[in-house]
Image (cartoon, rainbow, N blue to C red; front, side, top):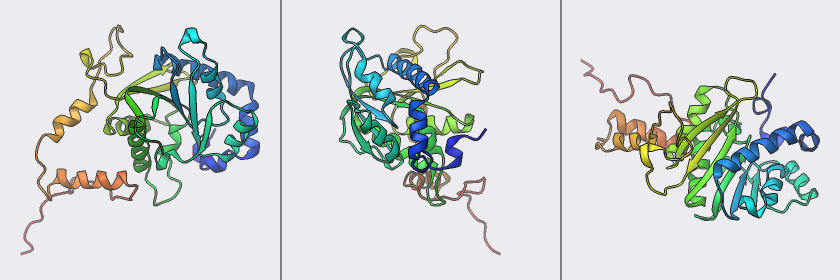
Length: 279
């Protein structure tokens, strides 16, 4: 069975008919509700907060955010962003309580720095791994998204993004883009090894170092879990001075171009290698 993101861009795939089918399906409503409550538990919000709902669709997750009781830290206010006008149209018809914005998160999250206490995303960010045209780079779209999301969250804020990676390469691509943007990142997988497996990317903004490198605080108390601080490893690599024209310098320039969404030739063992004399 083909994945939706392999068929069409999201703004075309979610036509008025498909959007209505998605919203009225009791199966999808139950799955969406389960994943939203799981994401909320990972956010660990203890007071009413302003939350950004990324890929909010028709507002199924937003309704849950609005209905969290005071005893559970709610109710929360939320702002939703989605690329599908049809989905947002249904959200307006359903009279959801959140504010809605039509936009492409691959072009960045268009909010002022520190606007939100937290962010949530259910089944959305895997769409960023697909290029809609030859001049668009998935790496650049992911970079713009995570960099602007990092800026839009207050210091100490947290984001939880549930997604369905196609493979381990895609999972690594998404996680690496988040770490490069400055997030502390941790991956959790529910129902591991089953068809209903769900991956949650837990992100934190600043807030100081935690013991043992557990940046997200999610794995605290778990046994047999190794935590790798990717940000620290990247900082250690960057300590050395990069000489102009060196392999490291060239790779850094290529990375900057990819972040801008430009098409960059694939690196090889010959990248940055000095050429010998012609004669």
